[in-house]
Amino acid sequence: MEIEVIGRRTFLIGAGASLAVATFLANLPALAQEPIRSIDEALKKVLGDATATESGITLEVPEIAENGNTVPFALTVDSPMTAQSYVKTLHIFASGNPQVGVASYNFTPASGKASVSSRMRLARTQDIIAVAALSDGKFLLGKRNVKVTIGGCGG
Amino acid sequence: MSAAKPRIRVPEKAKVGEVIEIKTLVQHVMETGNRKTADGKVVPRNIINTFTASFNGTEFFKADVLPGISANPYLAFYLKVPEAGEFEFTWLDDAGVKISQKMPLAIG
Image 1 (spheres, rainbow over the protein chains, first blue to last red):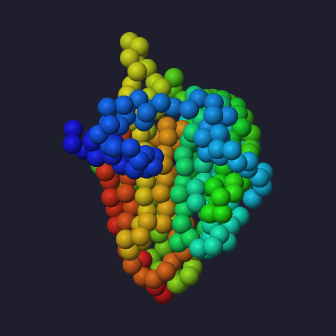
Image 2 (cartoon, helix red, strand yellow):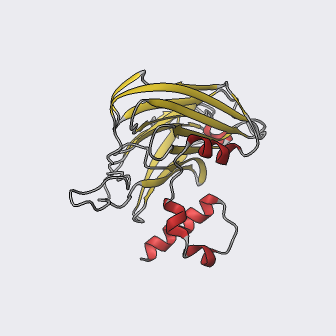
């Protein structure tokens, strides 16, 4: 039980919530588990009122994924990664999944390179969208379509 | 989650200022919370929700993970080597289980 409480606090700090932890704890399970279902909503949450420039992100994904349970991807943002100019966060979204968010990666100038590789689940054929939040407050966006033969989201 | 030993690949040696790739793999079911059992009950979500990588105590990479990441998550990322020292990698899941692993890095 104690472990779970620590988990919730960590989530709060991560989410940048500034309200008292005690007030939030009661509502937290719902907040933490409430997934974003639409790509428009997910992009609005990341971008706010800003617009993203569609350049500077390389998305390496297969054109056709036979198994949606494990689709490799690699994202690289063109950035010098210096203290003056670096990528703060790189988000990846699967626009056609039941929950569109896949992961958010946080970098620092010490990362040296704003690049990450992992594997994701894809429920069906869809667009993969990556958004990079830069240290100067600007945003970059990249998009690739992946055709999925067998979907991989359980449900 | 059984606290399986994660697999991590870092170079044994690197030069100061070199950008090195770090590859990690950990065993985890990454239960999405979307799945139902035969009798219609939702299988509760249990995923690794956070991964952090530090070098000599300074965090240089962090992943906030959602159920869209595959089971037994693989993750590769980079570090610009500042000096010799020690990595610490940490995985944290929804059940509160934490896996930590340290790795040395020499200059040469």
